[in-house]
Length: 176
Length: 361
Image (cartoon, rainbow over all chains, first blue to last red):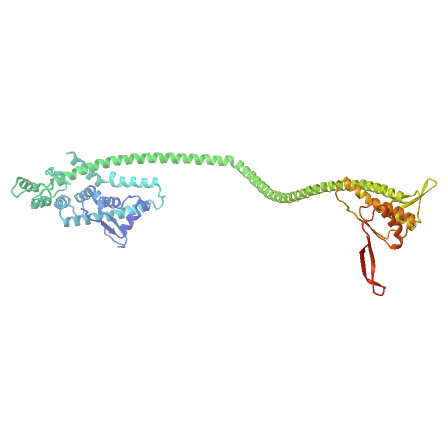
C-alpha cells in the first residue's frame, strides 16, 4: 500500500505533534497516532479533510510502513470492509478494494489512502479534543495519562457496539 | 465482512503474490529460482493455471490470510489488553498505596509539627541565641587572632633585638676577656718592668757607686734618683749628708761615674744575653772632660775611663791634657792621636773657616 513516505499537513499535523510523547503527549510515533485516530474515526463514523498551514506537516516514512506492513494492511482492510459511510451497501467494491485490487491497482491504492486519511483526520480531531479537555483541569501526570488511555480504550473498544460486533464476527470467522 | 465470512475460496497459495507476478514470470520464461522454461513446458502450464488462484482473479488466499491475520491480531490484542488492564490495576493499587502512605506521612508530620511546635520554637530561639553568641565569639576570635598576630610580630621583633644584644654581649664578653687578659699582661709587664727597673737601678747604682768610689777622693756616696738624676752624699762623722753644693769638679766626676756605670751595665747585659762577640757597641766619646777638674780628679778619671770603654774618644785642649796623656801613655791606652786646628794663612794668622785634622801619632 504505502510504498513511499506519507506526509500530512495543517492543523492535523500540529495536533499529532502536540500528542507525541516527545512533546509531553501519549503517542510514541506519528504512525501510532495516525492509525489509532483512523480507527477512532471509523468507529465514530466521522470523516474530515486537511486544513490549516501547509508548512506545518508530519511524515510517516516508507521504512516505517515497510516494518508495519502487515498491521497497516490489516487495519485498512478491516476499515474498508466495515465502512458504513462511503462504501455502505457496496459489498463488491469493498471486496475489490480490500482484496482483489488492494495491492495491484494504483487507482484503488489512491482511493484507499484518501479513505484512510479522511477517517484518520476525524479521529485526530476527536483525540485532540478529548485529550485537551481531559487535561484542561488536571495535571498531566502518569496516573492521569493511564486513566485517560484506559477510559479511551473502554470507550472505543470494550463499550463500543460497532467494535464489539466486528470483533465477534472476526472471532467467529477465525474459528471455522 | 459478510463476503469474507461466506467465501469458499480459501485456497493456500504463496502470500503477497498477484496474477501480475505470475504473468511477469510467464513472459520472462524464467522462475525466480532460476529455472528456465518454454511456453509449452509443464512449468509454464502449471503457472498459467495458477493465475486464477491469485488476485485479482482469485481472492481466496488473500481472504484467508486476512482472516488469519485478524485472528492473530485479536489474540495479541486480547493478551495485550489483559496485560495492560492488569498493569493498570497494579498501577492503581500501587498509586493508592503511595497516596495512603503519603496521607499517613502528612498526618504524622502534622502531629509532629503540633507536638513539637513549642520545642521547635524554643530550640529555634536557643539556636538563634547560640548563633548570636557564636557570631560574637567568632568576632572575638578574629580580634584575638589579630592581637596574637601583632604580639607575635612584636615578640619576633623583640626576640631579634635580644638575639642581637646577646651577640653584642658575647662580643663584649669576649672583648672584656681580652681587655682583662691585656690588663693582666700589662700588669705583668709593669711588674716585670718595675722589677727589672729596680734591678737595673740597683745594678746601675752599684756600678755607678763602684766607679764613683774609685774616682772620688773622699768617702762620699752617689745615689741615682727616680728620674735617673743623681744625688751626691758626703760622709761626715759616720753619716751621709746630701751635698747640694755640687762643685763643678765633683759633678763632672759624678757624671763620669754615671756614664761608666751605664757602660758597665750594658756590657754585663750583653754578656748575660750571650752577645759578647760584639766587640764595641758603645764607643765612649767625651768632649773636654778635664776642663773643670783638678789634677787629682784628672788622674783618677784617666786611669778609670779606659777600663770601662773598649774604645774611648776624648776631645781635649792642649793645656789640660798633659796629665791625662801621661797616664794614658803609662797605661798604653793611646791608640791614635789626632790634632784638630785652624788652618793658618801665610802671614801666620788663623783661618777661621778651615779646620785641619792631622794624625800626630
